[in-house]
Image (cartoon, rainbow, N blue to C red; front, side):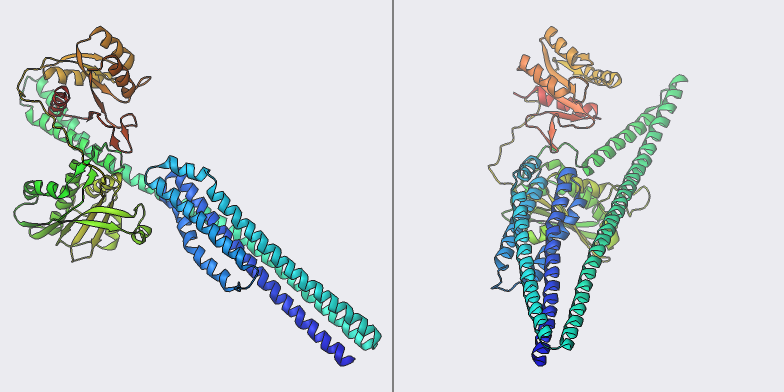
Length: 600
């Protein structure tokens, strides 16, 4: 009987050890499930932050979570037998997670395409919530199954222990004492498990606090980096604009002094002021391009034909010492972009290549049909997988180190000597390509030259026939039209009115939309409305709609120094909108007026 009781006690101890091992395994399994549940929640938080702010930094938690989910599932699979009753619930969790990941990825893709409304509609549809509810339900089922198994094992242990006590009392007091000692030892071990569980809970709380502290620190670092970038940009703008304003103010002061003395040799001062003002306008245009806010007029473009037409321009820009080679792909797809901006981008890249090569070198411009697949898009931010028209500009220059490549697209960053570059050429290219829905990539090594590839989305659909514009068959005919100028800034209104009168037109000028409508009613012979866009009470777009409703034959030209959503949406001019950006020269004004007035 002693041997039987001792053997039974040994079996009981082994059972308790097995219970503890099973309990530890259950706890580990529950921790894996909790970790798995936190990953889609992290991904959803990153997705929500990105949809709310448009900041790519919010997608970092999303990408990390998406990368971690397969590994977490694999660890859970290793702890789940194929014939285990938990296997169906794990399968449900995998399916629900796949649905949730698909929903998150689809909203991000929709937002990157500019369809934020549809992305938000998908979020509000409840698909993601339903998938997460299914994940939680399956995890709750797994927890209940695990708890029931632990309870069943504990119940069995209690039964064996009760029979052992009865047997011990019926046998010897020594057996009873041995049993009492064993029970006490078992309880001590159970208390150790409880203490270990409490310690685990405490460490989890501490870990959560540490994660929160780290997230706060990272947020502060990101804010500091943003402020540093803003400071660099502001400093560059202030430096360049102050230089240009210094030239303008100095030239105007000198001209004023000469005129006061009765001297009239002021042409060089006026030319210097005009040149500085033009450079300031060009700087503003480049900054708008970098910030993806320049107004684009996209057309269906045959890139091969465009490059062929640029050959003389490139030759003049690069000089005779640089050899130019073009490799044009047969059957090249069309793209839908602003052709003048494509030319500017290629010219910028060519001039940068010339500066990198010096007096001798070879410039290669290549076109090709290209497909950026999902794997490429997954490793490059803001890239949508699909078909693109690729333009590559390669040089045999000095190349770039990785640190230079990382900063190449930043505004005002340049490796050229003082007064040899503004640091805005590549940033302008980057802004235009991104605004057009494309991608730009630099490939370079020190001493091996540089290749910059531009990817513009392939155009699908019927080609539109561009209607010719111009002054018609008699460009020298005298002007007879009356033009209504609407501008709320008195000084700008006065200068614009004087310029249009200088061109020979009759001008009526007003300072608001309400005054413009009154002037149209009093002067039915007005042929064209030249209006600023950004005005109080009634903006230029609302004024134009009201004016054309009253006078259907009225032509309209919009102008502004910074485009708002009145006539530009997603960086593209609205259809049939005629736009002249401030500042403009009198020659640009004359050409735009005649182009619009002569349209049928």
